[in-house]
Length: 280
Image (cartoon, rainbow, N blue to C red; front, side, top):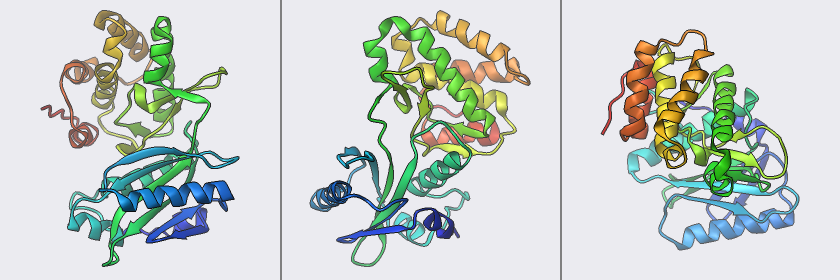
């Protein structure tokens, strides 16, 4: 069973509104309270869908991600902090756990400001909130590439550096693509990673296959629009050649397949856990 005691100790401020409880790292200002209340009211008035939104919140701008739970089993598991049969938690709890752990390890990322949940009339969690600091002076990689089409290779190399910084802290991001990379608009500060829903904290016995997936997926999701495959392969060859312990025999098949085949988020976990890539 998952214990939220440690998390709640780190986020000691409790914010209650309607049927929603949020655990926050600091007391929200008036603007933040109003923004949170408006978000909760909008959620209760509409059909529940995944949503991500910036919040107008004073000196500490916030970003909220809300995920509904679609099945009774998922609601029960999340309410009581129980894992699925495979030992992993449902996606909202996975993201919270991974985000908290990545922050604890000093990953380049927006700070986690809090988390919470809305409960239904039976007392079961029906949706989950994760609240981070809004990077309002940043662009995501997709937006940045549209504004800077001549700097594609520089962006790719910086993204590889970010990926390597994650790996050095034993954080493996299995949804690493341009949209989950944040670039500062007006400074030379390093890139930051977001969206840790599909991540692992810990080493994989399949380092070559996992890296092959990450670099192939990075190309397929967005980068292929901005650079030829041959030029991207050249950058990957240089980058991987600098890394110790990478087996090209294991790396190449997963890398090539990941550049051209759809890989669902559950299948990505299999690469990390078993080294096997199941596409389709």
